[in-house]
Length: 118
Image (cartoon, rainbow, N blue to C red):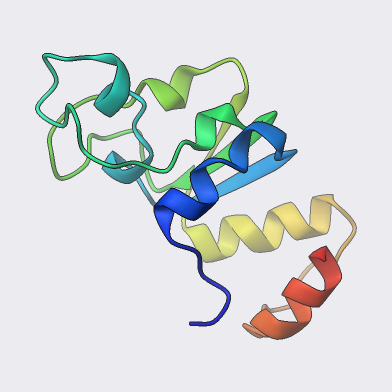
């Protein structure tokens, strides 16, 4: 995809990011990989979404990921958990933000979404 970034390229931007939206990820956004030397994922490359001013994490539940470790991001002061099906949760979030009408479906028009954000 031409709208994706390499982890090394995007991590430096999170400190200046207003909102990081996490859809379904767990271990790949776990700050414990950098802060807990005894963690099974210690040293694993992760997206540093916790450095954004605010993050919203959408997941079906608070269960652990593949590595089987808790994710401190979920209880960070600057993170909000939005539990449920990610597509339905995103639709609800867009309605709350006034971006779509209730009952509207997402079309997956990534190019249009990128233009709107840019």
